[in-house]
Length: 149
Image (cartoon, rainbow, N blue to C red; front, side):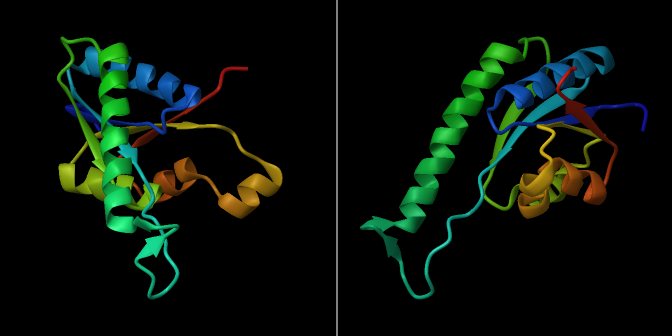
């Protein structure tokens, strides 16, 4: 694993993911590594054969969502990542766990930092955990940041 030269910090813009980003910043500073802030927006689904939902053209809506996510991620980068840490933002439009692991492989990152909200019970059974799927399929070590007790 060492040396760590490239780190992905995932974010869904929640407070737990901000804590994960802050942890990734500390690691990037320590290792003098590049930090890539990654947000994945799931693709919109339409009924078979339909190109619009409620009068909206889905490709345009997807692009607007991606652009807005980029703006939010840029603000997060400015707020949480010091200028001396080399960083960039990447917005993915795919199922989050798969998108993150594929991107990590393509970028040849050394570490993924991802926050977990600690969902349990029915919520975990139905939706699963993005962090868990990333952990199982990542091409590199994964640090899962959980909420402090």
